[in-house]
Length: 181
Image 1 (cartoon, rainbow, N blue to C red):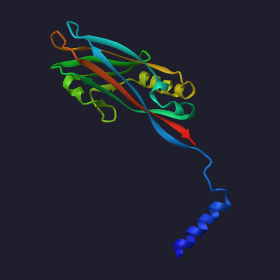
Image 2 (cartoon, rainbow, N blue to C red; image 1 turned 180 degrees about the horizontal axis):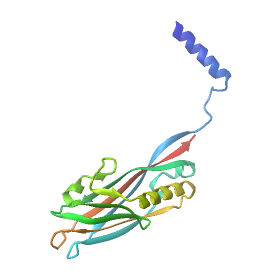
Image 3 (cartoon, helix red, strand yellow; image 1 turned 120 degrees about the vertical axis):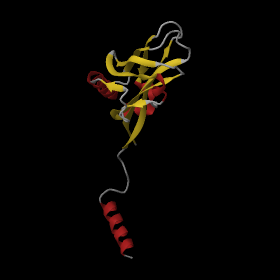
Image 4 (cartoon, rainbow, N blue to C red; image 1 turned 135 degrees about the horizontal axis):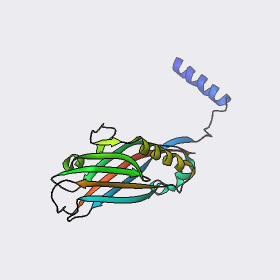
């Protein structure tokens, strides 16, 4: 009985203070994946180098673009595709031509994504690159045409030829908070 009376009192207070409907929007978190895989050419060269342009507006539903309130990254991962018996050395990932991270280790170690969140010792972030990532993500809030350039370079150990089907993937996991009505 006390619970019913308390609920009626609460509803009465809400109704008299203008709280009978919700007029304001609310924020939803929307994933903003920034990913690229860099193919390693089969043959005599053990080095690789590739760049991918990623227009951020193409990574989320267009209805959120004008409603973005905040943008953040929460993890960076490096992984590979294909089977190779040796290692990757001097691996580097760049964002807008600024070094974001370095990576190195046995090829097989990268079959499971190496992640910042998991404190992987195989990847090392670089402050200048993280600053550039944050700058570009913040720019996206006001400029939907923002394009990131993700690049990766490195070298494989072992004697050539490099087998076909190998690639290194860099994934930046980010989110936007968008206001919806």
